[in-house]
Length: 181
Image 1 (cartoon, helix red, strand yellow):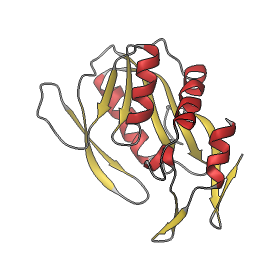
Image 2: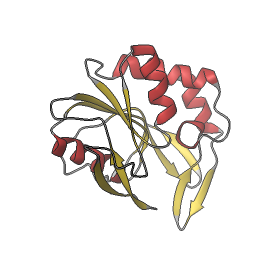
Image 3: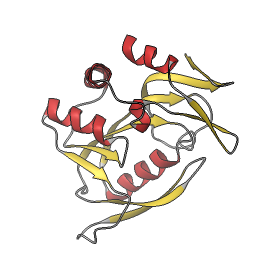
Image 4: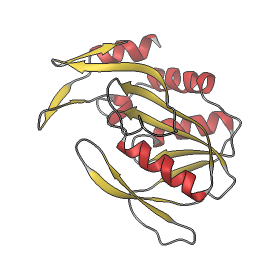
């Protein structure tokens, strides 16, 4: 995890209405994502996540590059939870709210009995992952594991749920700096 940890030292922190927002290649796609960083993260995901699953599920947008690379390495099909409806049979709508935004998202191609791995880039407020996990459970999918690359330490919308999240790194953002725990 040396490359990931080193990349956090250079990550800009911007203020979004009093919220210290980490700008990082894994979670934002900017600055440029070095293939060595992506490779390191995907290898670590493969060693950490429960891979005895039917599908990898990830939210649009920043989980896509991680989950695509993981899918290519494991031959596990990938489902992207989209930010717009397609009106396909079985499409499930969910409402997600974070510390700085809220929106509708749409799940396709997950059915009752599917065993899924949920992968995302960053757990901050937990609003997105809490809504996704609740909706997957409502569908009847079995959530085998939820793994994020980075988890901001602190209260999360997942705290009072049955869903446990594994992170590759736990961080805090304080006074414009990223601290790794």
